Each structure stands twice: as C-alpha cells, then as structure tokens.
Length: 470
Ligand code: FAD
Image (cartoon, rainbow, N blue to C red):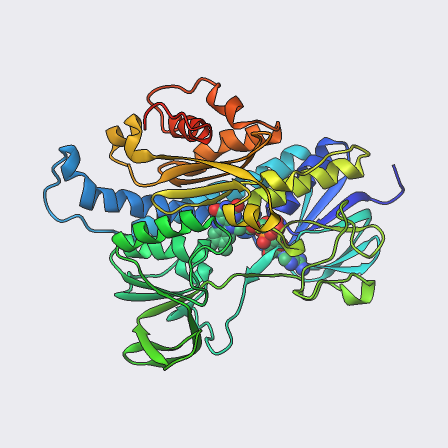
C-alpha cells in the first residue's frame, strides 16, 4: 500500500464509475468517487435508464388499460386518463430509491463520496470544486475517468428545456404535448416517443438515415417499424432537420430530404432532439495531462483501459463503444480487478442491447448484415411469437426470434428478438455465447413450458431445419 491517502480516485459516479469504486473497495483499495451531481448513479439512474423505464412501464399500463383490458374481459367504467403528475412523482420516487441505494452501497463499502466538479491536476492528483464551496485535492495512485456522456447537440435546433428538449427534458414534460416531433430514430428517440404516443401525443419521428435503429439487424428493424407504425408513430426517414423556428403556434422544423428535394415544414408543440450521445470530458484537464482523444472526442484507451497518461484510466461512455450502462459496469469491474493484479476480460461480442419499446427489441452478437460483410457463412433460424403458446395466452404475439449460427461449426454468432420480454429472453443466448454454445446446445437444453423462451429453442431448431411447432 502506498503513502497516498487513496489507491484510487474515480471521477464520475455513473454505472462505470460507481461500480468500479465498489469493486475496488471490495478488493481492499481505499477509494474516493467524485461526482458533480447531487446524487449518485450518473446519467443512467438520474436521467437515463431508470426514469425512462419507469415512464415506459406506467405509460404501457395506461395503454393496456385503455386498449387491451376489454379484450381480456376487464371492464373499466369511466374514461381511462393519464394522471401525469402522479406518473412523474412515481418516476422521481423510483429514481430516488435507486440513487439512495448507491449512497448506501458506498457507505457499506467505505467508498468516500465527494460532491463536486472533478479535474485532473496532475497524474496522481484530482482537484475538486466542491458543491458546498472551496476546492479540495485528492491524491491517489490511480485515477479513473468515468465521466460518461451527454446528449449530442443539433446545430440550428437549440434546446430551451420547454419546447425543444433533450432526453432529460422529455422525461419531465409537465403536460402531454398534442404534437411531438422526435429527431432521431435511435433507442432513446423510440423509447421516449413511445411513452408520449401512449399517453396521447401525435408522434412523428424524423431520421436522417433511411431506416430506424441503425445498429440493429435489418429484418428486425423493418418488423419494429411496422409494429410502431401500427401503434401510431409516424416516420419520416431519409430526412435531415436543418433548423427550428419557435412561434406562438409551436416549433416549426425545416426538414430537407437527404437525397435532395424541397424543404418541408413540420410543426409540433414539443421537439425532442435524440440524435445520439457525445462524450463528456470538458474541464477535466485532458490536454494539459497529455490524455488523447479520438476524432469523435472519446478518450483513447488501450485494452487495459489505460489512457495516454500514466496512472490515468478511463471507462464507460466516455471511451465510446456501445453506450450502455451494463457495458460501463463490466469495464468498471474489469478495471478494478486489473488494478488489483487480476486478469479479467470483457467479452465485447456478447454484450446485449435492449430497446424497451412494446414489444421489446433485444440483440446480442452479429447482425446478418455484419456476417455478410465479413464473408462468414451462416445459417438462420426464425420462429414467430404467433406460434408460441404463452405469447398467445398473454395476447402478445407480435415479433420473432432470429438465431444466427456458423454454417460449419453451428456456434451461435448472434440472436435478435422482437417480442414481449425480449430483454429478459436474450440473456440465455448471452450466457450461451459466453460459453461458446452451438444452436444445438440451445435446443437440447430443456425450456419450461409454456414460456416465451421456447421461441428461442424453436429458432435454434430452425437453424437445423427442424422446428417442432412451425
Ligand atoms: P454516466 O452514467 O454518464 O455517469 C457519468 C457521471 O460523471 C455523471 O453523473 C456526471 O455528472 C459525472 N461527471 C462528468 N464529468 C464530471 C466531472 N468533471 N466531475 C465530477 N463528475 C463528473 N443504457 C442501458 O444500458 N440501458 C438503458 O435502458 C438505457 N437507457 C437510457 C435512457 C436514456 C434517456 C439515456 C440518456 C441513456 C440511457 N442509457 C441506457 C445509457 C446509459 O445511461 C449510459 O450508457 C450509462 O449511464 C453510462 O455510464 P457511465 O458511468 O459511463 O456514465
């Protein structure tokens, strides 16, 4: 143990930073974690994963009560209406329970939580402009930068927090807008667009590319677009938003076809800018410490999460890759263990991605497009939820499971699911892929009946042209 008061100082208390801090403390290190928010948990717990899932669930229950209850023989007398104030208060309560939970875990593991804006003064020294005034220097053997990301700005469409908002604003609207335009058909745009569509807004999604969900499998993207369109979301694909004008009638967006043509005007009450996330590293002292960034501004690291400055490491959204909480967590654990002399490994080929629309969309491994581009010979097995007993029983038959396996070895290379609980279902394939499972390994494993997961078994059987229920 060195003379320094800390073995490790982490800047950023999101899923990357707080998990790294806890794991390092479990391994016997003396750890401090600095965060500029008043609560721990970073983007994910405060303004990301958790509040969005709270609102997605509440709005889903509302939509079910309004549209589906009667079909299940449930009569609701009177009008089903959303009570937005209660919904938002519930969401805030869920966030608080989660962020308080991290503060409790820090206490339990004796991680010092320092509230303030952190910066690297020198290798081994973190300066903090404290929340309650004053400045403090923390001296440590190692520094971890886990400062996350923020919504990417769209030039010409300036946020005002009221009529033009980012995801944080869209999680806290005080009334349901009559017309909402979402710029960007990525995960965040579709999730938050779904929330407000279910609560009654007319939602238009404008996307520069000619398809939604750019990183997902092409066949899945098409299915999802059809399903969301049935739910009332309108899509304007291949369209570039070039500017916004606010008037008493709302916000007018100028929209230009990406392939050329005339500008159209799209008028709405609220605009959500959801064109992606940018790394958050301003004021950290990167340049003066020789910490290099990529062209897109992400902190450069090697496979041990070392930046270009000795003793300074970086993890999570700020280093790029999949901008997901669980990816940041895996990196946090791996880095803490490396610093303790262990040899952990993050398998980036088996990190799942989930979109929490209804139905959910989940993916792990390669898409068909990626396999084709790499020249990999593969087989596909598909199974629709219309042929799954449980899906019929619960009335959630939209979607399918698609398994991609190596044509020669049968090893599972990817799985893509659109369907109820897809985010939970994908986990069996993630574990399978971690252990190098073949499609046959999956279909020879017993799957409880009647379960939605039987569709995965059937899709794996379909890879071998022998589904039992199709
Ligand atoms: P962050 O969570 O961004 O945490 C970084 C922290 O560092 C922040 O608290 C920030 O305030 C602090 N910080 C930055 N600079 C400084 C500084 N100089 N000094 C002190 N503190 C600083 N991911 C999923 O996996 N599943 C989801 O369902 C999901 N939903 C999302 C929904 C929304 C609306 C959004 C916006 C994101 C969502 N994400 C989701 C992404 C997820 O939130 C991020 O991938 C994750 O939070 C990244 O973790 P991180 O620790 O790298 O950074």
